[in-house]
Image 1 (cartoon, rainbow, N blue to C red):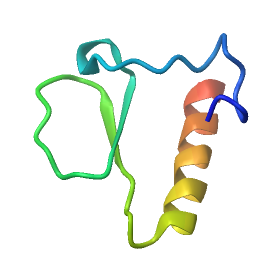
Image 2: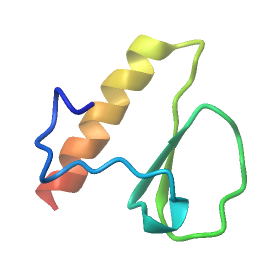
Image 3: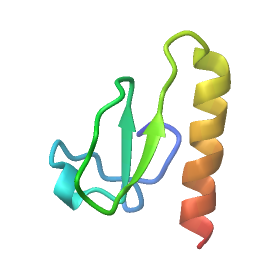
Image 4: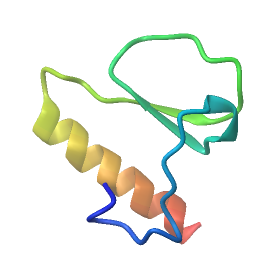
Length: 61
């Protein structure tokens, strides 16, 4: 991810409360306002493509 996006735009955190977007490969219930993206381990190519497009969309807004 860091190779695809500018460091000033993309900051990776381990604290969900600080996140604008949570990327996970597990179905969990999160109690915050961040958008959640499920990274499907059975369809990684499609999931990565959707994730990159989502991040680009968030960047443009």
